[in-house]
Image (tube, rainbow, N blue to C red; front, side, top):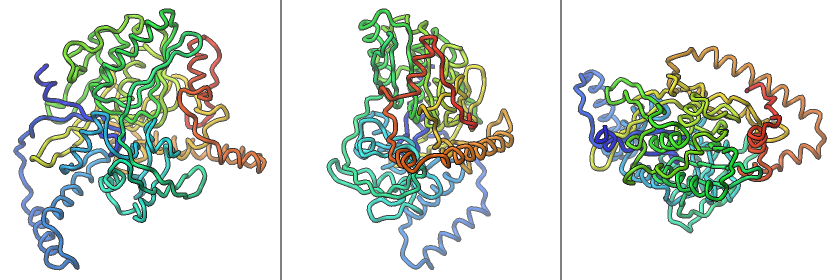
Length: 477
């Protein structure tokens, strides 16, 4: 098993799509597949016609690479062909250090959508918000541009600038933002002790150093405040990352050997069970990175905060802690990305990232398209979250994988009904507002997570203190 896990290095692809727990295999699996000769002849004929008749000469390698990318991307939103640069960029992000703007993105309606501006990066300091649509990069329109090309355009030499044209749905306006590229060094674990002896632990993404860094932070917290009476694990806006990181984070709060997540797919290699054991979450460090974590963290009252941008690896952690009733989940329904991608090297300069399995919570539940439902639905803002009706999740993607355990038709119909009801409620509420109140709403800035103005966090604190919690009035929850 240890040798198997050494071959399965788990990598994040947040900047390309933001919401993946991915397995990388060290060697390509050889499959005996019967090739469809008629279809291959069609491909050959199309290739020849393009080479002969297209208005401009096309490089052979680029044409075939694009054909492969089109074939893979037609499968689902998370499968893609990686050329050498794509693969290098993916590995950069895994280490938590890369050059660019500091945003996790995906594609929506032909443009680029911001899933999450990573904290303490040029993107977050410039005011980019989750849900923003990027329509132009400098003078180039994004529509028709591949996601890979958009990522490459935004990356570049530290100190250089790029202007993004943003369309913000909540404000119904477009505007430019000029951002200076920088080397992005992401510290994935942030902690502080709140009033009333409650620890706040925020994980922004799951990286190579996340588990050992979490262990050190928890040990430091216990030394600073031995009288801790609760812990809040904040996974909001966390788009995912290393599967081993998710297993290790959950293991820090659960009994040894607890099942964290299982995966099932067509290939025997994809049928795995990941437990709370060092062999399942250890990466480059020797021994057990969680060995020194005080036992108190397996027993303290616990809350996990999630929202619509908590995805994949974040959902694995939340799902495990919820299934074992180890923590109370507070916030909004998560993204709903319940599949695993495997990166298989094809040559020295390319790889295939392909969806190979569904993953399941310890109770055997698939959250694909459905997401993690909070035990207590709470708004991010004290006066409600009207922008929730504009948020898209996995289920909204045209080619998303279907949940194999439950029919989605009722889910989609019911969600659309509640969305329309919520829109009507918001419109009726807005109609009663004065022009001054509307202007105030327009200029309201996003809440800084972990700050004194963080309403959702304050409700988590109230819950641990045994005080009343203000539940969300949104019909979407």
